[in-house]
Length: 337
Image (cartoon, rainbow, N blue to C red; front, side):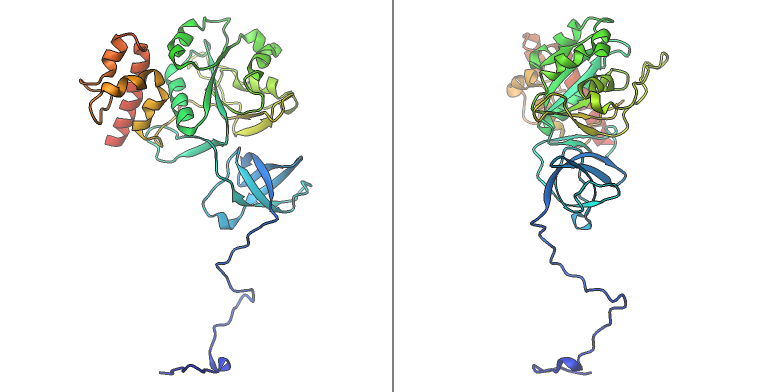
């Protein structure tokens, strides 16, 4: 066997030729110090539409980011062609840390977590008071996701001409959540947008709601120059609406200084598989104070739970405790499968 000493002649060393004729790979990656900052507006099949200064730039994710994906609302660093011209393509090389994250799973049995929006300040939960009927359990789930992700909730109740909002507002009164109540006429004429806009100025607001509640109609009124798809109808048999938004999209709020509206696809379920069950109670501050008397590691659905007495003493609505326990029992069934 051939041996080499300390003073081996380099010309005597055999090297494997590079068949492709390109430069060998290296672990040293470029720093991209000249990269420009941008905001992701929407994502479509691997292409990301970003706002760089006042230009719309189409970009793709750099290979060096690996499996890390950018979502709507992300602040990213871009290099390459930033002109925004037709057929130009930039490259996203960095994704900044997120201040908040709205996440969901398809259901409570789905282990795959979906990040819907990043860096949003608040979550506007749009719910119709009738046609389709309100779904308090879905509202509760959205609230859990909002509190867990660092977003402030906002209730937007539509179609008040068909049903009174009093019962639903009473259910969430203890949470002190800001709310807006609108009718179909106000929604169609744009008056509803004026009421909602007062809560949106200077903030990034994600809108979520199941189909048929008027979410896209409201977004169209808030951002008239970027009207989304035509509104859908509610099925008379199932009581469900047709999806009119198929991808999340960030739009600048008309007449606002720095306000953004993020329209998200309509949801029929809001899974919480990604959320630790012990954190669910944080979405119910009207009940959380009552857990001080609970036994250690209380599941809040057992005989010695202090929340029963807390509710009996009038500190919270029994319906709120029912919502909490329904969420917790759903998570327990998932974990026990």
